[in-house]
Length: 248
Image 1 (spheres, rainbow, N blue to C red):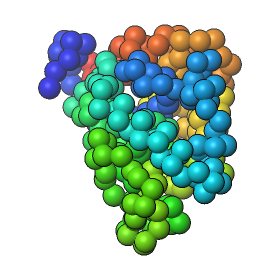
Image 2 (tube, rainbow, N blue to C red):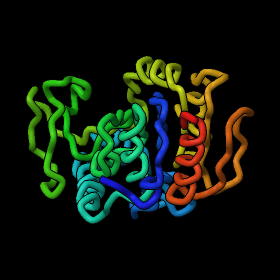
Image 3 (cartoon, rainbow, N blue to C red):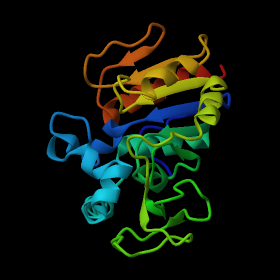
């Protein structure tokens, strides 16, 4: 598969480990609502009611209705240019995407190594044993999760997403991937909320690091700031990768 930006490649490239950390901004350009923006979902809903274990225990139908709507909306969106370019980059480099996003747009674009640290809307799990692999399974996006639907352990089914107050698993492996990266990119997040604000420090000081964001925010030194939205800034990033990895 070819996209318009890369067919001009006529040099042999050094194969590098490219690690990408992506956030809500990259999916916003595909039409997925964010949570923390000025018009984000947390301005419309009480996160304590719909994104905590306590909220789910108090009113499971309210929580399920909220996430069923988010799941159904995924059927109406498509990967954008930034998703597609990161997938295309796998032809030349070993690309790992670590994402806070619970959509599957990176996978739909063609990326083959995607780590979802906040879970996935296309999956369900147990309300009592969220991380039990025997209870995590794919679930059709157009089929609502209902009160009374059971997980493998007999508990109420719930979305396989991370809620406030729940343990963020797998971070040791994520940090190791970033430590071993030859090139590190942050895109679609402002680096103001953990873990995004901390992960950048796990990259080796000498490796090239890039940050794509349309707004002015403070970032650590030694990072190239590409001030643009994801679908525009990704082309600049690809150009930098080509420059860094071309064999003369």
